[in-house]
Image (cartoon, rainbow, N blue to C red; front, side, top):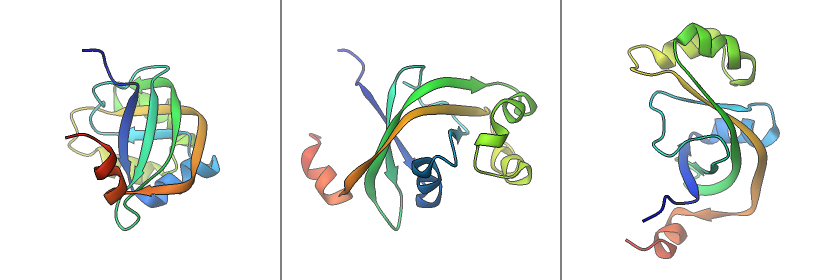
Amino acid sequence: MSDPDWVLLSIQPYFVQKILSGEKTAELRRVRPRLASEGRRVLFYSSSPVMALTGGATIASVVEGPRERVWDRVGASSGVTRRQFDRYFAGARATVALVLEDVWHCQVPIGLASLRNRVPR
């Protein structure tokens, strides 16, 4: 069986909007998504209260390693302050940033109920 073409990321709506507007180009993760790699496409699922697929992008690169190194590489494009960054990664085993490119948004978001009906279980 081959890997799926897409990685689905659940992201808070506030941060999805920052990504879609171009203000945020690095998505931060405390755990590296299993299939996240350069060139892989990602779908953005906006979590509650939106609960819909709202867009996607391509992973330009994956930056991971010591917290200071990741901040130096992507802090300005992460959409958070240094204090928020440090708080988010406190106690985390990993510090990972997915650098995004070719961002697109859904003209009509696809709600959770519709997604559940379309995806085989």
